[in-house]
Amino acid sequence: VDLTGETVDEVVSRGKHLLMRVGEFSIHSHLKMEGSWHIYRDGSKWYRPEWQARAILANDTYTTVGFQLGLLEIVPRDQEHTVVGYLGPDLLGPDWDADVALANLTADPTREVGLALLDQRVMAGLGNVYRAELCFLRGILPTRPVGEVDQPQKLVELAQRLIEANNARPQRTTTGNLRGDRLWVYGRAGKPCLRCGTAILRGELGDTALQLRDTWWCPNCQT
Image 1 (cartoon, rainbow, N blue to C red):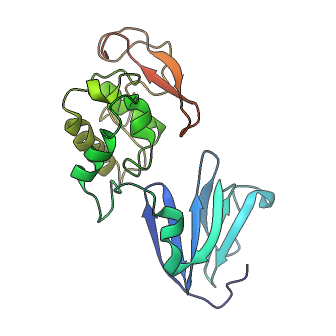
Image 2 (image 1 turned 180 degrees about the horizontal axis):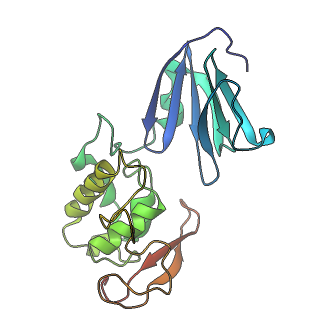
Image 3 (image 1 turned 135 degrees about the vertical axis):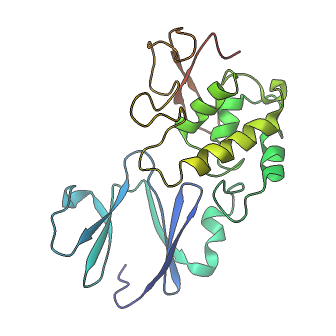
């Protein structure tokens, strides 16, 4: 697709999706696990090999390159709803609605809370790191059914606060520490819990809607 001569009017996010609005079209991308967008001054060396580039947008000064994008498609701008319309309220968006997010979260009381949090149809923007950290901070095993979660609205409120607090940070943290351990449980299997010293455990969660993903928890702090 050649959009030469068009203007990039704006770039907006919907959850973990990016929409680059160019003329009458939107370039829709999702990084998945491997992707990234880089911005280079014209003529400077790219940090990743050319064969990984899936999209290039450039002007006389800068070149923007999308590498190994997990999803890339171009749709008419007035058809954006066909690619992101299924998403729940955006935790950082102008449409954020905690009541709708709570209703989505509790719609299936038998579903594991760790799966519900990761489902972008519930609320858009949470990834695997936040899923593990939110469950720890609320003292909830990720396998606990949503219907057994005490005060689920507090889980929704905390999700929004964590995302907002990390919005402008170059490094994400849930402990508040930017120089030491930045996360409570994510990626810390076998290491001592930062609160109680119990070894952190790792397992997998998935269902027909979401693929198996690793999750981490403290067997003492979470029940």
